[in-house]
View 1 (cartoon, helix red, strand yellow):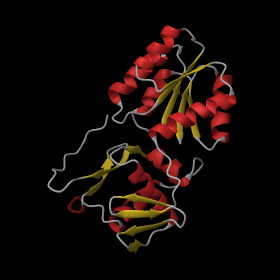
View 2 (spheres, helix red, strand yellow):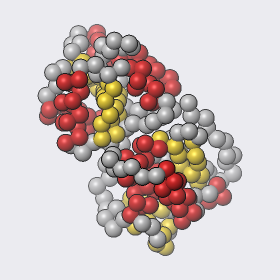
View 3 (tube, rainbow, N blue to C red):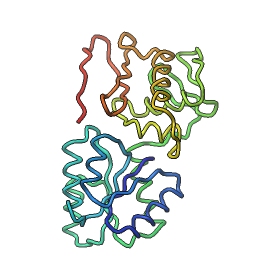
Length: 238
């Protein structure tokens, strides 16, 4: 999962990043709230871990901005040394999903982060995953439309699965890049666009078939589902 860490203590941030990346997550560090907000205007994350006391803008203020401006409700965890009961209640009432006291312990940090992620993004341990008329064979990386196999490369399979798992959610180009090609990948922009085009054509993701794989201008892509007769109303994402 892609996780954004907001903390003005570089030692703390470095430790949290090491713990979470060791567990397989992709982490991005921010030491100022405004830097995180600017990134959130053009990028997507699966989880935000926020400190409470940040010099330029407090964690609760960042959370309030997120809940006002982010179309999809991204989960948020506060990790702070504020241990008063009223602070905990205020954070949870403001929309946080969990609250961790500093100094966090490795086992507790991983347990709480993974618990929130499982709740928001349920893990499917089955070998197959069904999304409408498409069946994803996770073990063999194959997609079937009804019983007919669609010929895909492994990257095209990973991209299609990512889009269906995040149906209706705008995904930034960076999010797609890291999830499909890896954090250190440096592929040309046209490579992602080519894969998107292939997915659209091979899976016939067109409005007449109940789907639209749309470009979100200057941001990324979004796969949408339409019921028969439903109007195609584009959503604006800010």
